[in-house]
Amino acid sequence: MDDALLVLLLTAAACTPLGVFLILRRLSMMADAISHTVLLGIVIAFFATHDLGSPWLLLGAALMGVVTVSLVEMLGKTNLVPYDDAIGVIFPLLFSLAVILISKYAGNAHLDTDMVLMGEVIYAGLNTMEICGMEFPAAALKMGSLFLLTMAFISILYKELKVSTFDGAYARLIGIPTGILFYAFMSLTSLTTVAAFDAVGAILVISFFIAPGAAALLFTKHLSHTLLLALLISMANAVLGYALAIQMNASIAGLCAAVNMVIYLIALLIGPKGAITSYLRRRQSVRQMQRDLFLLHIGRHTAAHAESAENHISEIGSHLKWADAKVRRVSRALIERRLLRREGSYYLLTDAGAAIYADLCKRYYL
Image (cartoon, rainbow, N blue to C red; front, side, top):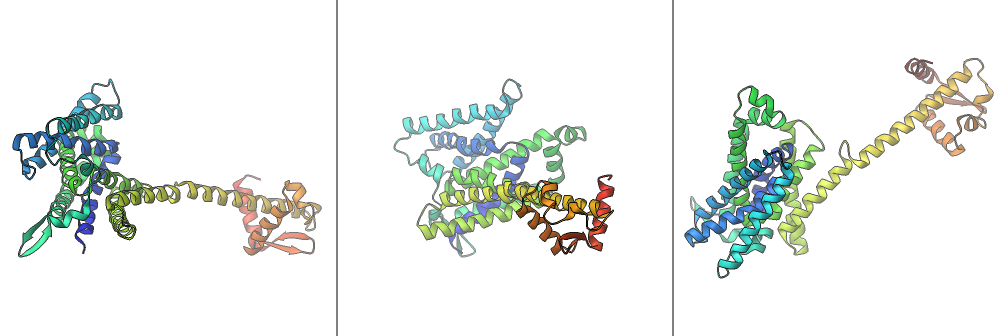
């Protein structure tokens, strides 16, 4: 498998499950904030070590993610501003500090803010590590390790995460340490963000965190099903985005993010509550109501006399105030369902139609 594709798949797999919980906790924008503010942690750690290859940069970035969450929580708990506004205050502040420090004091260092934002996963295979005589991309090993760590974290604490996500008050009542659990979850989110964004860039990290989970939640509300479906969507999007990028000779990270968005929009249209689905459902409901009204009209007027004037083909439209084309369409649909038959110039109910008519009379108390 291509190194870049492997890194993409593992990044998608590591980010997506955490993203589902972020969405359910209404903290989607926190992923955006963390993916940018960790740059300040990298800058501070670089100033301390003067080594871009130092593992302290990873630790500094992860700690800055936790600091971001803590500051947002502190500001949000004052009840002076909503959490969304708190994120909007803290995120630009910390990120702008990082940009200022880079431009002022690290102009000669290779801290490329464009690369941090956009990433270039095609270079993932250049930095490798040897294991058992075989070389693997370092980014793939990092993201694979974090994927396993994330799966272990969710599997072991699944019930606690589920309860605290959907009902924090009840979780505290039954003794779940929601505060510790929250900061452990956000620390893992921060660590995953840091490990991913140097290879695929902050934009794609945000996309993998949010878009697949949001798309999955449009189709299922069962948490375990959502996690599985989101994982499948994110990996499929990674493969499709990678293939399109190679075909178009364009940015892999950019196309993967674009594919994530397009798939989400499609899900928004065709999901169970999507715009197209809702339209088709309303249209079907209207047509069923028209068929029921037609059956009721025929049944009521043939009860006394089979060849009632109201049931004459040329008169039904005027009584129902329907156009002739509508009468033909509804009657044809009922005839195809063998609920209606035509006898000369009149419509009559079949035995099945009469049974449906009786049910409709009971349903509408006629």
